[in-house]
Image (cartoon, rainbow, N blue to C red):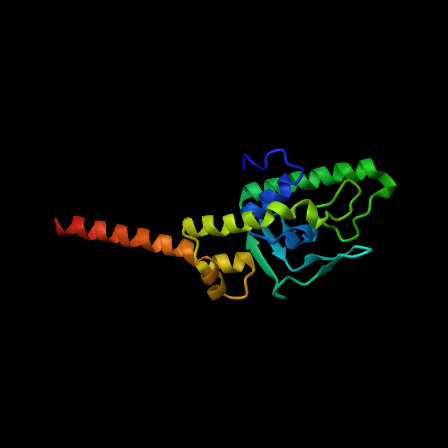
Amino acid sequence: MQAIKGDPSEQVLYIALNTGMRLSEILGLRWSRIDWKKQTIKVDAQLLVKRGKDTERRLGPTKNGKARTFKVAPAVMDVLKAVRQQQLERKLKAGPVWSNPRDLAFTDEAGNSIPHATVEHRFHDLRHTFACESIACGISPKTLSEALGHHSVSFTVDVYMSVLDVMQDEAAARMQQRIMERAK
């Protein structure tokens, strides 16, 4: 968190670190998909980029084609509220040049979508950190798989098996200690 403090992409990176969402999902997040009362985010699209002479950005289906809705921490909602306030201020300042027809949560000063390249150099590490910390906190592989939008729990387990192996070693050591204490 200290490393991203003050970074122009701090809010995007914060959301990534605390939700495990893919970069394209965060950049494609629309305000209408945030339920402020239930404190949930619905991920049913991602911002797709077709690079070339004329870069084209459009909303498309999620990577696995499945929508997901999940509850987020109050701190995530606070960051989203700050993003919303900042965007409203930018809209007033931009006046008639403001353009956000997709109702995106993360935009530049004129309402345009944020280019992936602005954020992607550190992004994947944050998604990995979210997954590893979730496992370390005892989040079930099924819950984590759903949060990450993986196509199956087995895929999540395969990708993060090394973290799970360390946890199994720790569990075995704790079990041995408990048995030894009971044997006294």
